[in-house]
Length: 222
Image (cartoon, rainbow, N blue to C red; front, side, top):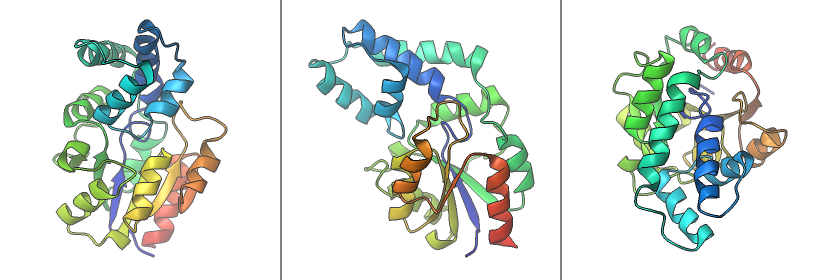
């Protein structure tokens, strides 16, 4: 097994953003008259792009979302990001350690969202233009399209790609793409069931820290 490219998800893998964004989502959905906890929102939202989440929410509440819903939610999240957003523990040290290996981001989030997040946590210089988002493909995770697009753009065989994901949908997408995957439950949003959910989705390794991830990479390239 080899590793010529490390493909990072963003939310919950680079930025420890899931608790923030999903607590806001829960607050906004509850205002619509459908009580939702942060934990419920995480299960509902994790690993999905916003367009898919919005459609599912409309089915859940039984009517279209208010026209201002998406923009107001995003504004509130960004306000909290400025005060609360942090990198996932260990990711900065991991990026330094694997600096000789090519890397990219492939995420269900929008490019604007990722740019804001990377700037906020001080990692905006690590990926430059090597960022691939779900709006570039017709099918989001758990389909493999975004990972395969990234591999083609980076000119790397999918078998030589290592994906780092925190969601079952993301791990399933990596499996479908024929890539190795680390199911990482290092973010603050993870729950006791996370390791088993990641394993059931087919993660090659299920790990709780970036220190463990670094050892996997060392073994692959050594």
